[in-house]
Amino acid sequence: MELIGTINSYINDFVWGVPCIVLLMGVGLYLTIVLKGIQFRNWGFLIRQTYVKAFTQKDTAGDGDITSFQAAMISVSAVVGSGNIAGVATAIVLGGPGAMFWMTLAALVGMATKFAEIGLGIKYREKMPDGSWAGGPMYYLSKGLNQKWLGALFACFMIFAGFMISAVVDTNTMAAALNEQFGFNPLICGGFFAILTGVVIFGGITRIGEVCGLLSPFMAGAYLLCGLMVIVLNIGQLPSAISQIFTLAFNPQAAGGGFAGASVAMVMRYGLARGIFSNEAGVGTAAITHASAKVNSPGEQAVWGPLETFVDTFVVCTISGLTVVMSGLWDSGIDGAALTMRAFDAMLPGNWGSYVVLGAVMLFGFSCLISWYNYVEKAGVSLWGIKCKPILKILWLIFIMIGSYTTLGIAWDLADTANGLMIIPNLIGILLLSKEVVQIKDDFYSVALPADRIAREAKKASK
Image (cartoon, rainbow, N blue to C red; front, top):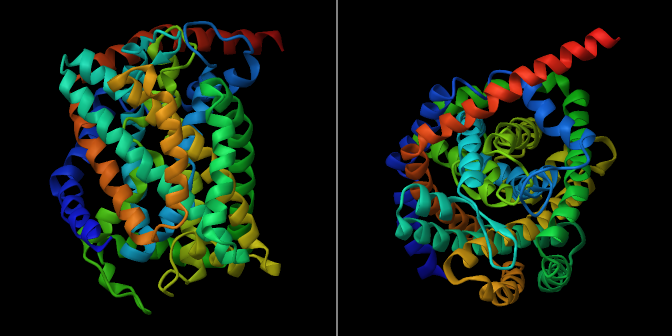
């Protein structure tokens, strides 16, 4: 394990070095400009085209396997997971509160990146021999750029990332949280999670969509409600926490207590890495799930991208991060989900906060296990065809068992490396296909925006 850690450390330093950070932020900023600040404008329109339509339009037209809402909920289930609870905590432990600033900044430009990924995922998706639909970076790199080798390379990185990020890290986070709270044996926990996951993933994309459609709104809502209680009940500490986040983003050495200190580059590195781990903007994974949605145009589904990133980072991650910073426990030597649990306990009366976090860890982690398996399966199918599905399912369950007993540090480091390896080919592809992204946005907005305006005016006139 020590050898693996050493090798991974060299790779990690490369993929999360200055070139990757410049690429990540640069592509996001470029897309923000060419898409005319899509994440800052027409928010009412975006909400009506996504969440409002999902609850008011029951019949979804277009090709695909699942509804637009179910596709979004699978994607939300993948991003709203361990990264929001354990990932934020580890970022603050390793980089200080300032890591929160860089995490948020990456999400701000990442909202445009995610629009691009989903749009291209729909445009270049393919219908499989069994009637299902498949898309994502594997396809828009292969077809859009006519570089099959690059699509295959991304698929290989995707499979490695899926096993490391979800099967290992999510299981590890859940098992560690149960061990922290109740002293449960991690290996037994792993077996339990493997059985539950197997029941869902052997039911295919339709069952995954149904389960995530039920879990995602509930789990996010409950966690956010408790997080808001933390802020309201401790509102006097909020200004100081915000001040720490901004100050220590550029002057981490000013942190006191037992914090060992970090450079600005280190704060940026952990903030960006954990932020991307959480919201996946730039990784390309969201396009894989959204490609199964029943829609008539790429832009119709791409508008979910900015909202997903906003909910994940600006809402859920911010709640976790503020609680950890306000509690003052971030330099106490505790890490991961255990730190977030202790922070909620400290900030809420009655010592019941840790149970709230534990429940969120279980729901978030389980939803990630089933939604990330979908990513791995689609990547495997693009390489080896549909015959690989049963093998991947069995391997997935085996890695869940392995993840339950993995050391936390090496698990997160491997996950960071896996994310970084996917980001590089994906962002290069999006950059080269940016004109098509702009066309996707213009085609959809030119029709949907005027129609939305007319509908709103008609509604006002009828009142």
